Image 1 (cartoon, helix red, strand yellow):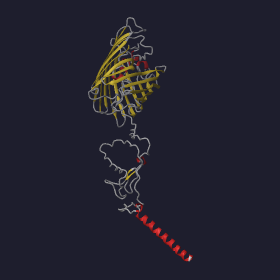
Image 2 (cartoon, rainbow, N blue to C red):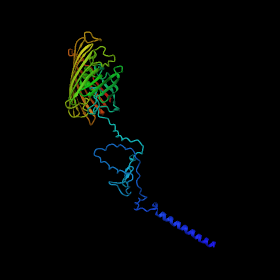
Image 3 (cartoon, rainbow, N blue to C red):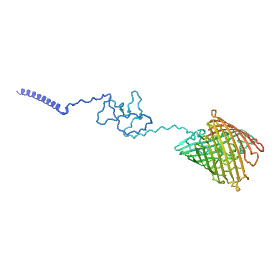
Image 4 (cartoon, helix red, strand yellow):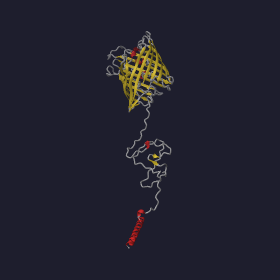
Length: 512
């Protein structure tokens, strides 16, 4: 009985457990958590083509403006706002390819974008716009933008780009160029009566160091030119002395001011640099009658591309040697103006067909050009008063040049000279110069001839009255920078005893 009850109880228990399981399953099925969605889920993208991951927000990178005429690239589409439905991975946005962290994806097989195209990471400092590449350093043509130097200075620019400074150094607003003039001479022949103090090139066969000049020129801020150079082997004792040392203010083309030791604006041949002549030496009359470099100041102005120019200046009084052919003393005035008063200088010039280059020769084989000038000075000296007048004309045309000069001076001794003086009466001097030449640019060869007539004292007829004929040739290795010259000079005395003072000379020159 108990067994039958027990069996029925086991069946009842198992039946009750099944009923409880059915009730639990029904409850789970009817609960909201197990409810089925009312609409189907969206199609998920394939695992092989995942959606791109956008980079974290980063500061904007400034970009330089595109060059004129360039086509701007299409802007990348902005990412959709948070919560918006993402487009399918295989759907292209309007206007092009899918966005990527570095911009638009390259076409298949195309070049990869450069590493510099990647955006900076979050928190990095913004990149500066790339600076334009520095222009290659090329020497500017001489005289193109450089501040002008006084006429006759070794630093004077050349309008044609010839004989200008071949080397320049720029340091901020400062531009520097070397000044080098080396002239080594060899006398192949010299007459027995030749005398350097009388203006002859040599006194005997042998070698001579004519000039060894070294210095530098520069421009500050574009309108403050300056130059300093020294003669390392000057005079019979080969002592060093100042050649030029000046400062300029050339901000206005109609009024350029120069102050210091520089060339006096008198005589075209004297105002032309020592290394810019067609022949080895300047004309004998010019060396004897032009004051060359003195200490003072002058102002010069140029109008309409040098169609008209003027010069006006004040210098220390000129000291003239008692030996006429020795000319004027180039006094650097280290102790000031000790024995002389003031000299006044004026010059008017014109170059109506365009600026002439600094050389006497027409090295550029240029179109016809003409330059003419007239000069005057009065030196109120302590030993003598001197009046000087000069006129000059220079023509260039297709490699040919022609030069003519007239020089006149009159000196009167002071009644109470400040220095010993051998002159006792007024002396009037006259010199005439004529020169022609031709330069074959293709062959780098020039030939020139010069005739001059000189009378140191118009009131006296003696052997100092003479004429001279010089013929020479020059070969230009590098324009007027490196050249070799050969000259023959014949001097003939008009009165008195004829002297044996002819000479043949060679010269090798480096002119920077």
